[in-house]
Length: 167
Image 1 (tube, helix red, strand yellow):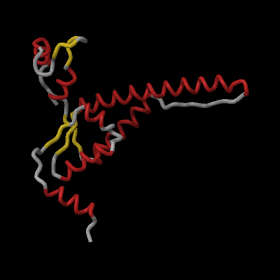
Image 2 (tube, helix red, strand yellow; image 1 turned 180 degrees about the vertical axis):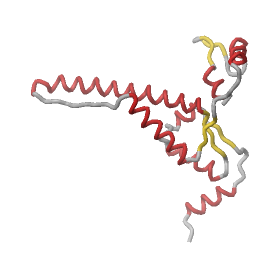
Image 3 (cartoon, rainbow, N blue to C red; image 1 turned 30 degrees about the vertical axis):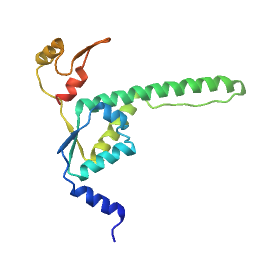
Image 4 (cartoon, rainbow, N blue to C red; image 1 turned 135 degrees about the vertical axis):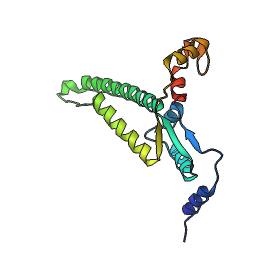
């Protein structure tokens, strides 16, 4: 006898989706907590795969997400070090020690890369390679404020989006 879950996934597999491929940019990865995927993002990936939709993450988006995660990890570890230092100052007169040894950057990067590869495999997501457009063409777009480039109060933005979209 089939369970409701089995029937659900069978029905999903019979649906003809309006697209054949999905590409995820850095914002979707960040929101979905890639590679430690949120339940919602995992569900999206699983349903899309069950419907026969190919899933892609451009390599520039994977790189940018890794750097975002590293920045957050360093910030949280710095906060933890400060709290340990403060607590140590408080209990040190008693002769107590509070050991705290955070992983180094190389270990964090290696662990993150492994987690990302496991997520790619688990959800059957393919990476899309960097694009190969000539830098002169991209520069012209930037100067002309074309494609993804635009003026903001911070100056001209859009290079990261351009690289991701060209992948």
